[in-house]
Length: 143
Length: 143
DNA sequence: AGCAGTCGTAACAACTATGGTTGCGACATG
DNA sequence: CATGTCGCAACCATAGTTGTTACGACTGCT
Image (cartoon, rainbow over all chains, first blue to last red; front, side, top):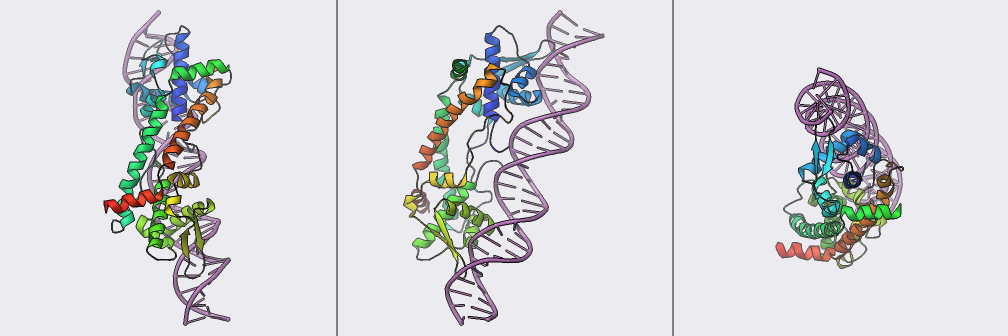
């Protein structure tokens, strides 16, 4: 399980809910979503809980329970999903503090941090350009 | 793991070698580099082996052995280092193949792949803007 | 020829992250 | 009160990363 599939699964879940609601259903259950994603309902609930914390989804409990979107698909960007689901930075600095006596060891952290900030800003800009509505349109166009 | 510190450590090692050579030394040993990075020499050798495979560094064996750069620091970008050291894609698709009967499950892979390709292209562009010479200049300016 | 220093590489442990699974309590609708 | 679903904790398996030890291979020097 190398890389991050959380953004993929989260986008999948939200898009599925959006399409399901658009077809007239009130709520989507984690089991339905898990079937489409091909995973366990608990995995979906864990992920949707993060999205709820970010204000992108909401859940109802009790009988006839399930998940809903809080916004239109066109108002959710992949950046929103990414930030809700991937807290950590893209690149880490050193595992252990480098030698402060060494010029390079002392100065490379700040120098690289500046670059990494720029890279992450570019990544966010790029992710913000696509909404889940765009994703759904692509899906339906290819079908 | 958390995130990837390989790019950081690799950039550190190459910059260190570059500065050391600039000061008149022939080769740098993995132990010297490991001291500055604050890690084990084997970790450095493992990483530098990948950089050698990518043509950025070279090693001599035997007595008086050690590592050298194959290019000037100004001719090595962080993109070069990144590609030498981080093979995998930034975002993964689903852990398990999603339900092909479902419209979303069937179409979301290609749709997201297109977006991810764009994001990675932006990331590469951003990383290519900085050379190790730039990094070293920042380090020396801050010292 | 032998010694010493360094790389090359394999093997292993520790730690962390992720994904998957089970179980059970909480809750609201009918 | 019965049912279906979420909430959440606990646990396991797998895998990636880092650190460490060990030993063989190689080469410059004496």
